[in-house]
Length: 349
Image (cartoon, rainbow, N blue to C red; front, side, top):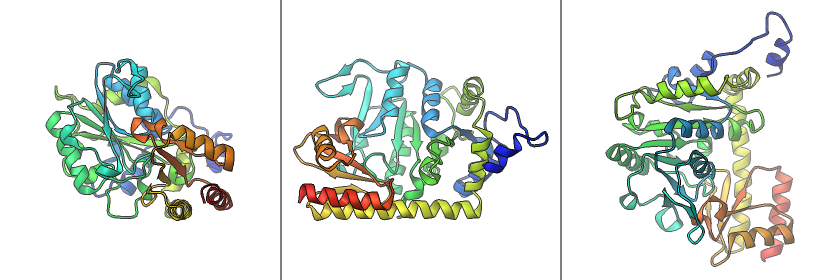
């Protein structure tokens, strides 16, 4: 990144606008690194300034007349972008849901995977695995069910794989590992949680050429038009960083970072387990999902903040299904995680 930044100050190294879809070398590296066995080609990949930005661009692609389904709980950007696009009805305070959104409950009771037999048809299904906030990763069998469900209903899955590198069992790291997924799914991903690119901003979205609207028009063709209209491409400096990440040295560094945060999750899990709490997630994600039965999420958040001076995230911020839980993040310096664990044990002993 430093070399690319310096090169911009030279006549030979200066570059103006690049391809809106991303640099060819980076698209090829993403395809080779993450999709070598699933038939995804570099031309299916759109490099962006992050998965969050692409979620909103995808909503522009879908328009205001579609109905979405989301995991409950889930990352708030899916619901909030739907509200902004005018896809929803009013917020219903009594159930803490927006009208015209299908909330697919994911709880310990159903293994954090929705009962698809009770989910009505929607145009779009947002699905994040490993999930933020619960940390649950869907199994191959579950994702096969999801792909079949989308195919039967004529729905498009938007699959958020931002935490895929944290998977340590045999759960799929990409929706495109599932047969038939290329005909029903879009995948969005990011360097934020692998390489600490939260402020650098670099991600990508995969739209296979096999994904067609009901009239036979390729979805990627419309998304390309939106990208070219609203975006001038990811920063060339960020893209240089992405290429560095996907070099052998970079891949090892990212795996080391992921391993470090997974050690942090072990400390957090041990802390709450020793205190007698039921703990979920952690195994395949940098998040620990802790259940405080019968308690309000915001009250628990406030109690931990005021008495232990530790910041958590109240579960209800991710949807009504998060009530009674808090999310603890493993993204932190080891000494801070150890100190937070000490304070939490002191608070709840």
